[in-house]
Image (tube, rainbow, N blue to C red; front, side, top):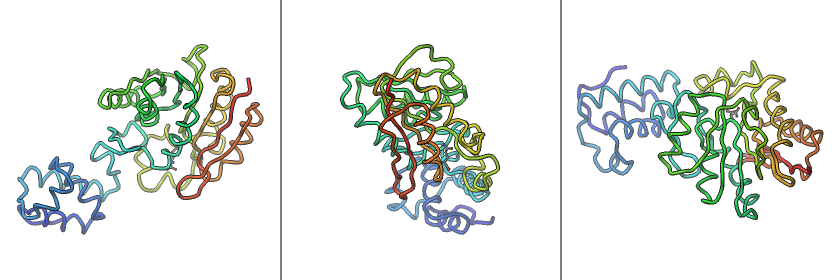
Length: 278
Ligand code: GLN
C-alpha cells in the first residue's frame, strides 16, 4: 500500500477507500484522531501528524486483512451505548437488541426484578438490562475470565451495578432463582462455513461454536433453567436462523409454557423462550 508522505484528512480517507469501505475508513480515522464525525467533515485539509498517519495506515492494513473494526477500535455500540470490546469477547450484534426488547416488558411487573445473563461476554445484555431500571438486580456469568474483565470494565464505565460470576453455565450459582434468564450462547455448528468468513474468524470460538449441531449449549441452558427460575419466570435465548423449532422443542420437553419465537429485524426467528411452570 503506497500513499502520500503527509496527507490531510481528505487525502488519508481517499487512500483508505482504495482498501476498505468509506464508513470503516472514517471510523478508523476518528479512532486515531480521537475526534467526531463532524470534525472529519469540517476539516478535510487538516494535515495528519506523522504518528497519526502511521497509526491509521496500520489499522487500515489490518482491516483490509480481515480484522474486525470493533477489535481495531476497541468499541462497539449496543442499544445506544458504547461498549469496550477485545478479542476475548463476541462483538455485540444489532440482532441481540431483540433480547433486550423482549426482556424489558417481562420485568415491568416486578418491583425488584432479578435477572441472570448466561455467557455475558462484553456484558452488553446484562449492563443494558441493569441500566434500564435501577431496581433491577442483575447477575452475569461467563466461564472466560478474560471476558469477565471486559464486562466488569464496561459496567464500571457505564455505571451499571451488575454482580459478575465466573461460572460454567449454572455451576457456581448455588440455589439462586431469577425472574428472567437471558442468554446469547454459542450456537453455530462445528464446521459451519460462516466460521471461515468475516469477523467470525477473529472471535472467540467458545462464544460461537457449540456441539450437537450447534444446539449443545442451548440444550444445557434449557435443562438447567428450571432450578434457577421463579415460578412464572421467563427464559429467553438467542439462537441460529434455523434453530427455532428445535429450541421450542427443548423448552416443551423441559416443561416450559407460553413457548414462542420472535423474529429479528431481518425477519429471521432469532429468539425463543418460555415461562417456567414450576
Ligand atoms: N449471531 C452470531 C453470528 O451468527 C453468532 C453469535 C452466537 O453464536 N451467539 O454471527
